[in-house]
Length: 279
Image (cartoon, rainbow, N blue to C red; front, side, top):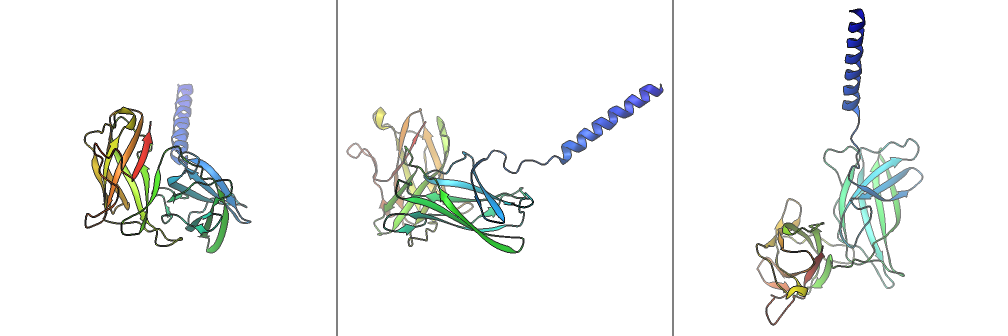
């Protein structure tokens, strides 16, 4: 009997320890993310993440963490400002960007978005400067970031009939499906070379077509409208088969005036304003 009691106590102790260990094991702050690169100064290392482990032409959700070089602890009290810059042969300009905020439910992970409107090349490059505060002190890191060209048009820069420049970037679907996909794009205007604010309360009509299949369209699409919750334009994109799709668009202002793009007809097979997906 004594032996049975001892064994029972041992089993209960092991179970209790296992439960406590499971309860206290921290969930990874970067689960589902891949590191793009690190930027370091004498005090900290800033880690940059995306879901793919790379930056791409167009829209990017970007995640940041600050690691103390001496203690390897991650900052929980950070405040960020950032500036992406394209260094061209004749000029320097920025791109659309959001503020950086802490990710809900995370202690050390921060998130924002960047919209690279042109790719790097042999003589022109993107840099990213990060200014941040933590522990009551201010710091800066800066480095080159890789933004290669894309095989399909995920972002487009156009001039409207109002003479303003607009940037339209595909946000989702990231992985298109044969289905009615949730469709999101970002719409920005160029105030100057360093300022690209979100354009609010416009509309974007869409007409997806398959040029290689007689330029046929698809049913159940929904035009894009502005949503203040995330400052993006939301609609529905119907893709009825795999392959290459051209998403023809017409950009309209708040008065429904067409600023860029044309309707697709028998005579006009494509709009001058479009994005592309292929899967």
